Every structure is written in C-alpha cells, then in structure tokens.
Image (cartoon, rainbow, N blue to C red; front, side, top):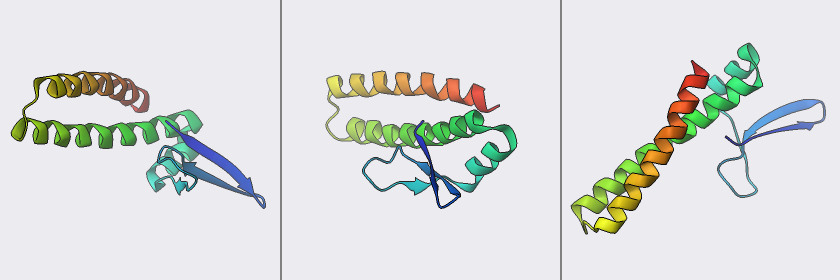
Length: 98
C-alpha cells in the first residue's frame, strides 16, 4: 500500500509508489474518487486491494506453469505459502474498502 503525495507549484499529485524505481505513476481515477469522497485511508486501501489482486493473479499463473512443467514439490509448496499470505492481506483490505 504505497502511495506518494507530492505538492509541486500548488498542485497536489497522488502517485502509486509500489511499482518501484524512481518513476512513479499516477493512481487510477477510481482511487482518486475514493480519496475525495471517503478520505485518504480508504483510497490507499483500494490501491492496495488492486495491487494484491494483480499479485494473486500473477502467482496463480506461476503456480499453473510450475505444476504443468517441472512439478517441483518444494516450489509448489513455497507458492502455496506465498498465496496464503497474500490472501490474508487481500481479505483484510477487502474488508477495509467495503
């Protein structure tokens, strides 16, 4: 849940800082609307929810590829544990945005 707020020449810019590196992208319009309507914390929670949704989908693809190619049991177990941790955080954020 990384969001950066900066003020340049009396203009506020809200950026997604979870992408890493020095280049930050602006947050999506639905997150900005949530921040304007309900406040900063619900907006950040929605940003984190969107991020974890992408991470879970990527992990699902990794698991599917591993199961269909090498089928290494240690890797599969590691992916399952990582999925469990992500789902715990995902469910917490889902409760926050409702």
